[in-house]
Image 1: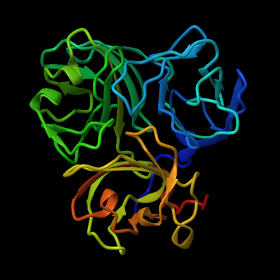
Image 2: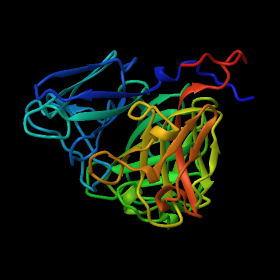
Image 3: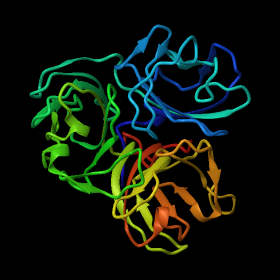
Length: 355
């Protein structure tokens, strides 16, 4: 039976919802820890995703932000418009003229990860990096400067990352995604619907190790002089899992075993074009008739939408597709990233309490 080393998943990953108040300082609490990576999206309106972290840091009053739905370089909003602070139980957002952060009356979702603060120097790879790593939860934020030549970069996890989301924050480039399920000679793009792309230049056709990930000479993953950020995710039993499934094109869709009840699921077809679907049990806690179908797409700025043809059931030991929609369950291969609401079994091998 699956067990975990993390008895309370929400101490390392948590989804927090809030309503914008249009003020210059809206304190969002209840995250349960000080987040080091905040991924935020306006659910009510068309507005870009906002990704900020403690390692890239801030300029003046606001943290730098990247958008998963564009190729744009990082930006920092003026005045108090944006992510202002990272606190012990959440964060503060402000509003001046942007709907992306705190527009009055708009509903927002934030997905929050705990790493290890602003990070420290890592000299393990051939490229020096700054790393904020949480080895318990298998998550790290890594920044480095590209060389344009084959290289390695230390990630600080002490375990092998199964998924890496990578972007030049200083230039206008695609997001590049490594996923162990599609191999080390291919990549996906977070900001597009494109199928997998084969190119040894992304990751030098080399699988990550417990200490480093490899880069080729491609400009998207390792452009010479480009300042880069990488979000690295390793499997942690009972807490997180990066894997793949084969859709069956049936309303009685594929069941994906994770060994825990999911709190958050992101999926993408790798064999064909499809969006990056983001579902969580905080925005939509019900299965079955009620439909766990409130979706956001990582690759678009669109508002949240619901569809009976996109139902995903979150179960005690995994998730199950309940639709024939090609975006999540045609006869094709899909990758996923999942984080737990609660494990099946606690670290002492005793069934975990329901949460």
